[in-house]
Image (cartoon, rainbow over all chains, first blue to last red; front, side, top):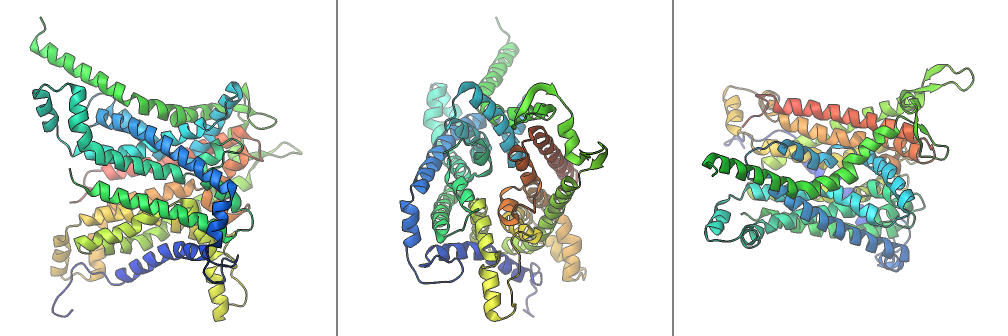
Amino acid sequence: MASHFDVKRQRGFAAVAMVCFFLLYLPIATLVVFAFNAGSSLAVWEGVSLTWFMAAWNNSAVQEAAARSFAIAVIAATIATAAATMAALATTRTEPYRGLTFKYAFINQPLMVPEIVTAVALLIVFSRIKAWTGYSGLGFIVAAHTAFCIPFAYLPIRARLENMDLTLERAAADLYATPWRAFRRVTLPLLWPGILAGFMLAFVISLDDVVITEFVKSGGQDTLPTYMLGQLRRIVTPEINAISTIFLAISVLVVTLFFFISRRKV
Amino acid sequence: MLSAREAAENARRQDVRNRWLLSAPSLLIIFFAAVGPLFVMLLYSVMAKGDYGDVKLWQFSADGWFGVFFQRDIFDDTLALNDAHVAIFARSVKLSLATTLITLLLGFPTAYFIATRSERSREIWLFLITIPFWTNLLIRTYAMQEVIRNEGVINTALLKLGLISAPVQMMYTDMGILFGMAYVYLPLMVLPLYASMERLDFRLVEAGYDLYATRLKVLWRIIIPMVKPGIIAGSILVFIPSLGAYVTPRVLGGGKNMMLGNLIELQFGQGRNWPLGAAISITLMAIVMVALLFYVRNASRPGARHG
């Protein structure tokens, strides 16, 4: 080091960073390791087994909650992505117009308010509607999820649109393409990676939600996260670790895909 | 006949109208399932509480707002501060500030470390920060519980090594909540810090060294002032969710060490006092808005941004 003075170096920073990464992954690693424990302890290792994965797989409450979580996430993310794509088209590649700032603020609103506050506000309104209409199905959870998924889906779609200029669309129009055809054949294919990334973010966000679902759900509508939250009150077995591990694997998979899709350049 | 200017003006109006139609679905969904309910909640906060939860519609009362910080003595009807609520507000603010500070102290060197790697390895380190950020908050809280509880990894290891004779109680304490929140919100601090450090102009750092500044002085007088927007953004991003935290204090704090989020839940559950719960929620939201305004003012101030 004597011959070369590194201007970027700060003493101890690399060490702190390593400690940070270690601390970030130690709890997750412990959780995953004990999912494979043969015994029912979460601290004493008794050998490798898949007992707890089998237990989770055969648990009908877990099956139902997982299926429900998945269905809600797919529907909410699909609607949110469609709505967010339209909103992104409406708020990019334009001269500023009256109401544009309002739209930005409105679409990002779910990110600004603490989740617990939105959750109890929805509880108030939805419990009234449930009493009035007698309907208490999954529609309420889907509606709530769709709303808070929109800003997440909007983000990557808008980012992608802002990097696309209007040249190709104008060329399509010059060649007598109708606006719809130009959109279908030019804009949509170019925008597709952004839409896919937006959908994935929305999907993961919906799948992970616990607070809003906990307050909006009616009896017997547990999703996987609310089921797990309920289980944590009791004596915890590695079955929860097994469920968490599968959950983690899905999240990591989706995020990795997102990472590669959103890196593709226009 | 339309003049060219009128035609252009018409086309522009048509375009704006189309843009409103296109954004209508998003705006409507968010209005119905996010913004609108907040206004209903504002209304609920000024109504009389129902006997079994809910409210007595259109019977107005200030009791909800009154109950946020005060209580009436049940015997002589005198006013007194509601000590329990004041303590919960104080704990929430204290723990959120402490979480922000811890994540800043750990996150700053980490972000700096990532920002000074080569372009290729930077992406890998960044990815390692992003993974926990996108994994379920409940799962990460549960993972933390497994580490800090009495039979958890830390205590078992310390006992086996003979460093302690009895487990150190960390679950169900403020410290446990603090550990948990620092753990789950750390990525929220690192990401904005990294974003501002990535653009750092190291020629200025070099100039500092040329003028005989020490490493510490360069850090304090050059690097920190330049990445201040990132520090503020990260602090806000950690402080706001910490203040409204619900899952982490519920799992790691147990029933006694409540934060604002749990106090709100209590009013809508066993407390059966919806107006009070609504009033506390709006108070929490107001504090968050003040923090956001502070951020917006600081971020948009001329000269606050470098590079």
